[in-house]
Image (tube, rainbow, N blue to C red; front, side):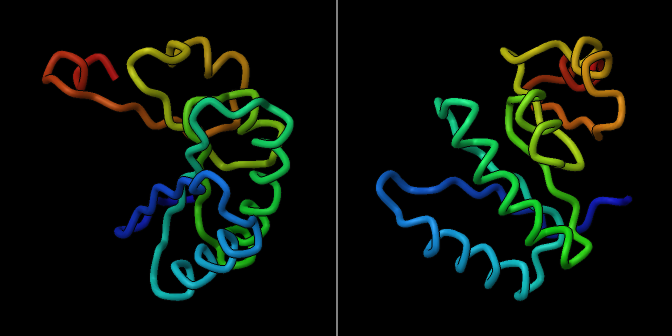
Length: 117
């Protein structure tokens, strides 16, 4: 699976009804988004996985790679294609050991970080 050219990082707004959030994602996917990342900072695992499963189904139906932000466990549990890790998250080598089938993205903010990634 290859990444596309239009990568959307989607974060539900506090209090946003889930059907509205999913409808907006569908519109974005139908409008040309070809890589999707779900970012739910500070969410507990169970609701993050539940939403991730629904978003994964939308992405899968369109052949769009789907990533989870920060959480290898959530990515593996919801059937994501990959996980995107920040500098303060699980080290990439550990993530690969825990979920070897996932694609791995990494945030970098300096040349040395990019080289290490």
